[in-house]
Image 1 (cartoon, rainbow, N blue to C red):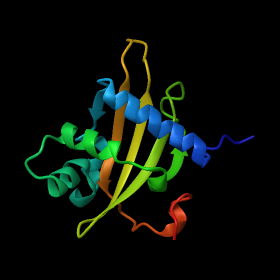
Image 2: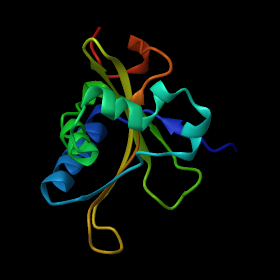
Image 3: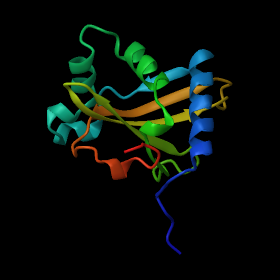
Image 4: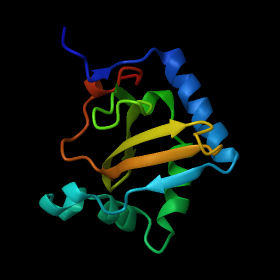
Length: 145
């Protein structure tokens, strides 16, 4: 039997996830944002976390921006849930997409862990970059047409 890497959670599950995300943010969660990623060395600069955050929010602290922007995520922004094959004991990651007017589609991939082994809430933001492929309606299971 082959293990599935992605799945679509129910609307209720995503609403609960977003509630946990906001709870963590309101209770001083540690935010880890990968401004530099190894894969970015081979990627067009436009599609990197560093470029996207600097382009959308010039002169702002990246972590402050990320905290503010992920707090705004809604169930309509949800795309799918992804199992982290590199770290199978960690929680799954959720993929979201936001459209920034006159700038473009932004792909967001995050993991929220409440009360980690160190007693802290943590939010790991792997991706916050312009989407390499333009978003289409079918990518969003809960977005109205």
